[in-house]
Length: 169
Image (cartoon, rainbow, N blue to C red; front, side, top):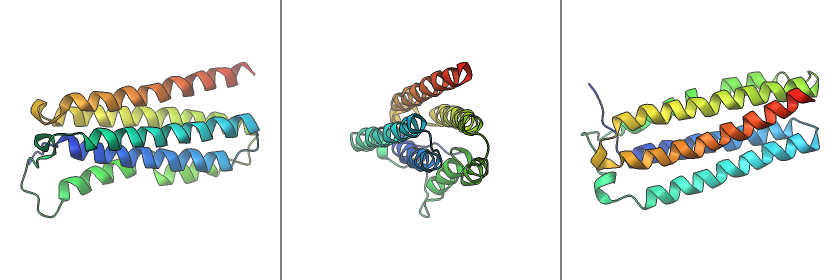
């Protein structure tokens, strides 16, 4: 059985992914002694919080048509499915615990591990949104999903720039 998701459901998951990102960047910032790296990760957390607000706003501005359920789903299983995907693929708890287990390494190495993971997580979020975009019919807000993708691409650029600067040190 295939599901068509509406833009409202996708934005709800985008909000969850952003909350996961906020938590990740706050946790890694707490684990770092380097003041500039700590500030960088806290700024990423703040950006995730702004993205969450953006997605909340975009979701609030959806039309009733874009919020319409596309299938009979009295138990809300499609939303649970999407939430599970978000929580188990983008900024995954187990991955975060694994990353934090490396905090006793030299700090430069630890920061590189964090940056590599964060770039991968941001890419995963984009892949998630691209996949979901294909499931959202045009008349139910498909174009709005592109806004999420653009937001996440900006994170990759920032993380990549930081990783390049770290490698030059």
